[in-house]
Amino acid sequence: MKEKTALITGATSGIGKSTAELFAKSGIKLILCGRRKDRLEQLQKKLSPFTRIHTLNFDIRKKEDVFKAIESLPNDFSDIDILINNAGNAHGLEPIQDGNTDDWDAMLDINVKGLLYISKSIFPKMVEKGAGHIINIGSTAGKEVYPNGNVYCASKHAVDALNQAMRIDLNKHGIRVGAVNPGMVETEFSTVRFKGDTERADNVYKGFQPLKPEDIAEIIHFVVTRPYHVNIADLVVMSTAQASSTIVNKTI
Ligand code: NDP
Ligand code: 8X3
Image (cartoon, rainbow, N blue to C red; front, side, top):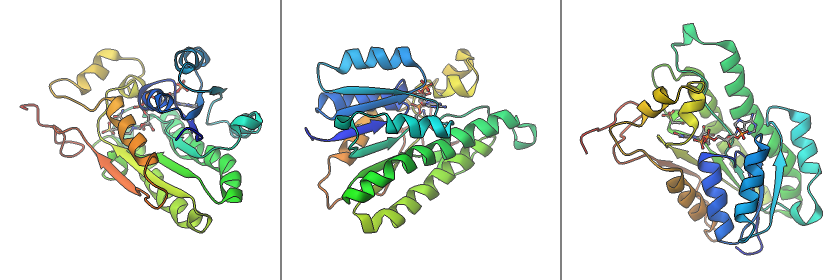
């Protein structure tokens, strides 16, 4: 994998950060994206001994900024082999009738439209060279709807549909597309969902062993290191304690 270049959205935290760390250690050249510039700089410093890193600081909701960021890539980073569509989050956990429309906008703008903007900015070169690998980070929430998950679940169902759509439409161009759909992973996800209420966020993962972001990073690394004729199209992974979005065994 020495010669490959990967772009990871949402590399400042959680699954994206762990994936960046693991990719760097296998020598994959990295383009790391996120809004928190200080975190991107820290990660660049930490991972530079292992590989070459370029950072892109933009809000994935802002279409022009996404395209400008990709256009700004220096020549030696502009040929992207692997796109990890990871940036995303949940905002709120209320019955749909009590939902906050700003939260709905944020989830659909980031998880769905943002994923489309970044993908659209990278498709042309992949299509031109007839190669590329796109990993969409979906969720178990994209496979089943759970109480109060409504719009977050809808956004992840959309990721599931787009994963299939990309695989179908890009198939003739030799581009691999697949999704990794995690269950509950302890990251900043719940802190963002509950707007900084860390006590409520911590409670989500109390009493059982949730997945760690490193677990998902290992799976993503496995997916991108398969030989070219192998495409892992759709993978669901939960912690052993979790059987579905609502069934969690707290006795093991
Ligand atoms: P984190 O909150 O730890 O990380 C989210 C990442 O997304 C951050 O790096 C953040 O960067 C980035 N991001 C969020 N909003 C924007 C934006 N507007 N523009 C650019 N980047 C943005 O959560 P996770 O690591 O858990 O989440 C990563 C992905 O995994 C998400 O798509 C999530 O839906 C999915 N997932 C998470 C699960 C979990 O239980 N944790 C389970 C299943 C799926 P910054 O704030 O610096 O912009
Ligand atoms: C995140 C997992 O169950 O909190 O996608 O929705 S869950």
